[in-house]
Image 1 (spheres, rainbow, N blue to C red):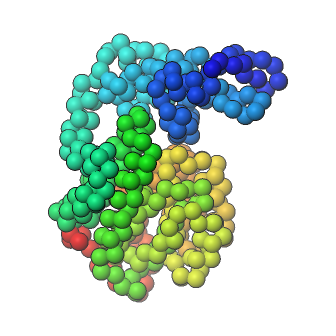
Image 2 (image 1 turned 45 degrees about the horizontal axis):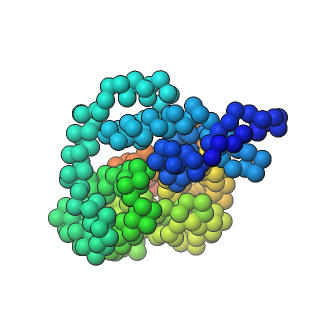
Image 3 (image 1 turned 90 degrees about the vertical axis):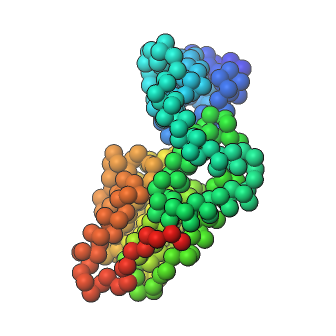
Length: 329
């Protein structure tokens, strides 16, 4: 449905399509459009007097091209932010065989897990994931299987190949397997650093948090997880009550940059200086504008270096039980 948008002065602006019309026109779901808006800054719809989204013709043309390129093997993260001219140039090149071959190779390796999810065979999915942990060891499982599989599932959802409930089935299965594996890692109450893990109230995604917890546990840390969506005040209270050395937070790519930065500044002000605040995940604001007093960890591979740095600074008397565990669980 085409309507007229209202500009900042209250005057009629160029006509645009509603989000429902764009969904029908491009085949991109409403959820996908909203996620791209948060994650990539495009599309950037206008709003009518009731606050409803409307998309101008130029943006709809770009979305059509993006969908065509995705069908030809391009990944959303590589093309969604490109201008119309660049998209047209890519479309003239046709499918990207090299990129498609790489993606197909990765999908072939992980196809079993994807197909089990599509078939809704949750118990078989859990069993296959558990077998992979035993075969690979938890450290390799997280880095070499969970991380790329998460990406494939996210792309499948963004392309409309996965329904929302199927993405949720996958997430629940993976979380259950990771929790069991983490619980099997030998731990000591004297282990240091003591790391409190959580996410902010607006961050419901807990899979990244569990991946970080697995790596920290393998490094011999004492992990205390509050789960997701904990109020900032309660994170600070829990850190004091649990005598945490570190508070570690995870942020997804869709997190509000302003909310992340303001929340971290608030939490940093509530924590004693002796408690370090670590932040990681896909939120680009962390890399562009690292908040004062917050240690930003770029990826899971950087966790070990941060743990080693903390122990070096804490000194031999504060190490506790720090034997790293990297054997299969």
